[in-house]
Length: 214
Ligand SMILES: Nc1ncnc2c1ncn2[C@@H]1O[C@H](COP(=O)(O)OP(=O)(O)OP(=O)(O)O)[C@@H](O)[C@H]1O
Ligand SMILES: [Mg+2]
Image (tube, rainbow, N blue to C red; front, side):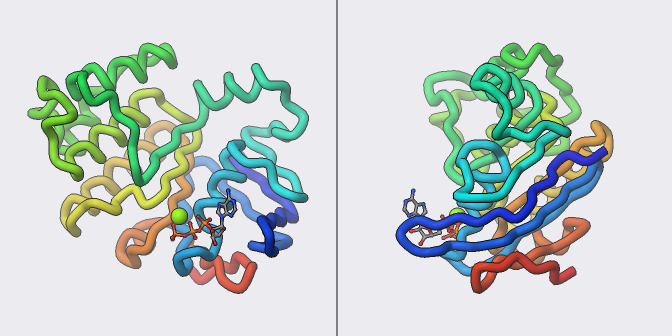
């Protein structure tokens, strides 16, 4: 199934950031986007995930042209189908790790899969307050929180930004296992060539264009 089909996307702020970008993602597929700082990767991710309207072009998510959806239809899609992993996560600091994850599954009517905690090696952290965890531990909790809602598409902006090589590989394995099992898709932005190489395809955003390099 086609999860994302974007056609002829252009965007500018006070200058043209990128133009005529086409992009597709299918079930069980993973795509990495690399590119220099400031090339527009995060902006493109926001456009593909419905959070930013492009200057021109169309984005079809799960068969629906998002420009044609009303606000409640978009909200519903974001709540049940789209999973956003940000570099700077927004965990509830006063709550336990476990509670952060449970809230997410409750809001999306899913059941927490304990296997994910094991895969991410955070199962022993569940009773701790997130404010008492390290940056990398918090990042993995925030990834578990996104997986707990069972999204069909995962959008990740530098999901391994705070992690050492070994932990980054562990996160990539958890994400890839998830998309295979759930027939979901993954698009991630990264500076890390090793992380990019763990995806099925790699694209580079450069000189306003997105080109496939692998
Ligand atoms: N809301 C905004 N208003 C004006 N300019 C913006 C806005 N968001 C981003 N930009 C500009 O667009 C360019 C691309 O930003 P973006 O965050 O997409 O880059 P990036 O490739 O993700 O960079 P990094 O690797 O540093 O995260 C930057 O020059 C930035 O200043
Ligand atoms: Mg960015």
